Image 1: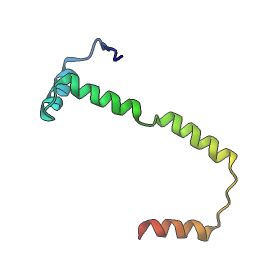
Image 2: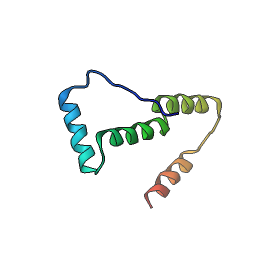
Image 3: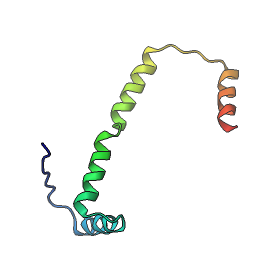
Image 4: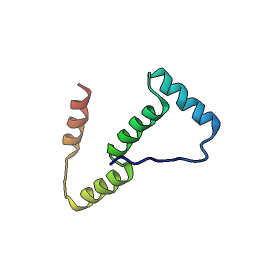
Length: 78
């Protein structure tokens, strides 16, 4: 069952800005914030991703030659 969340002590200028953005998108402030909270919760947490990536890099042994690296860089520019 959905839960209500209360956020206290939000500065007035921030509430005003969020209200303007909500209005521009044709949504209420509650709908606007709910959508952003859902997107935020479903997105990958950067700190967790970095930790996992560093762990993977530390446990995997990959050796690339200078030529392989340059070829990959040039392939991305095409």
